[in-house]
Length: 178
Image 1 (cartoon, rainbow, N blue to C red):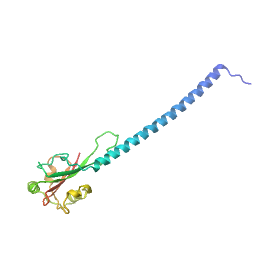
Image 2: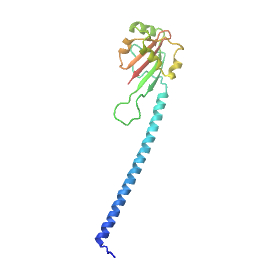
Image 3: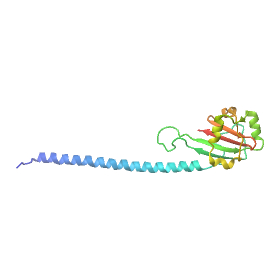
Image 4: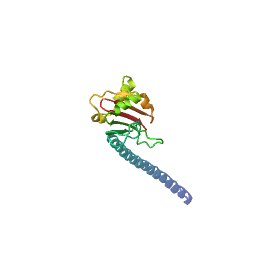
C-alpha cells in the first residue's frame, strides 16, 4: 500500500482547488457575457422602438435647416429618417435624412420658380426624387402635382438638399441629409 506524504496530499488538494477555481471563473464569465448580451439585446430593441417612433412622427415645426428665400409659409410637415443604424454602438455620426412638404403663401412658388429658374421635372433624377417621397406626406400634397426642379436652388445653402416645387399648388417638397 502506498503511503501519501503530507506534501503530496497538499499538492493534490491545491491542484484540485485550482482546477475548480478555473472552472468557476469560466462559467461565471460565460454567464456574465450572456447577461451583457441580453442587456445589449434589450437596449437595441428599445432603441429600435424609439427610432421607429421618431420616424413615424410627422413634425410641424420649422424645417430642420433653412430653405433659401422661404421666410414664411402656411404650414410645414416633415419626417426624419435614419438610413444607417441609429442604434449602432460604433463610433461616428448617425446619418439622418429629412423630407417634408411646405405649403407656401399664394404667389411664393411662382416667385421662387422665376428667380431660381425651376423647370419641369423631366430628368430621371428629379422623377426619382418624387418617387422617394414618403406616403406619410401624401395627405399634404395635391392629388396630381406638377413638379419642377432647380439645380440652382438645390446648390444654394445647405448641402445635401433637393427641392421640388409645384407652382400651381404653392407647394414645395424638400429632402435634406444631415
